[in-house]
Image (cartoon, rainbow, N blue to C red):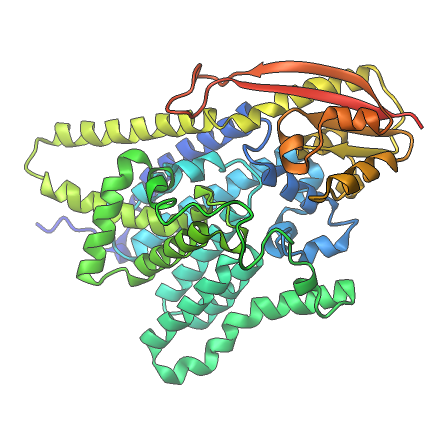
Length: 485
């Protein structure tokens, strides 16, 4: 008797059952995302708070809707949830990341890959993805747009896929390079006659340019708004060499999942299958390797950049996982299942250690203490100066109040001296001096009165000491200063 169930004759009950594994994975991921949103009050990198401020205040500073750094697609999507507060915006990111997992699973199912629901887990088990699953970064927006466009492409809806893919440039700069690759896919699949449709890949860029011109009145706004610390050449964040990204691959795929990922990548290349997935990974990974190696475009070399293509990484990992599993098919079923459970459980725990060790997010506790002190000892505020965006978020001030500090120390000191009375400065011992070259003494010399200062030893939930230089306590000191005249 043939026990194969035809998709066309599925009963409602069996239809629900086939979704159950995916729903279970999504439920677990949702709980993990909620834990990240409530256990950590701020981003582990300053960009998270800055992007939130851009989205919230875009309703006042309309140019932020089309800004190069504020990212138009991110700012548009987050401009509503940001009005409900910082945590609401972070919870919105959890929803986006769950949608990424869902779409990645559906993509794996479209490709008829065995154990397709595991693709959800392999998205969320990527350490960098997990670290930012409840943050305010632009990479998840890019990843969701990417996987939706890719599913349309694989379903033969090439024009719709190209239109969605054209929006990638509105989320992150990688969209330019992936758009070029997308054109190659389309021509390879449909032939040169289809090239007449290639301008669809530029629709997003045109919308950005036209909207920026309409809002700002400057037809060259995108060029003029280009951040000064993103030079085409130069080494703003240093030139780390060609091994900077390869040695951080475990932070991208997961330490225990590096082997199935590499096995899936190599075997897929050898078998010439899943070309869109493998070529996407190779393009973005090699691109960032080169940019980081030579310090181009202000590359800081963060593993989180690869979150943008996390669905491709997850499906490649799944193919490697399945092929390795088939090699051990003769082992008793209980051993195979226990091995898989151990790998996934240790990967999940490792991800939490990775997040717990990202010490920068702990500064939120110290800044919150300073904010509560100020609420108990209020002073009229005319302007807020801050070294970390979380202070601006708590005080609920317009980020445009913060001076644009430069690399010129004399100019920065002049900005402090010219600050109006009633200016509050929330400064710290580590970020402010490193980013702006200003210490608390500079504020006092410029006429600021120190209202509050406190030293903190900020510890994680688990890592009591550094592991190979990562994690452990973070020493920080927060200052509140006030300009009286």
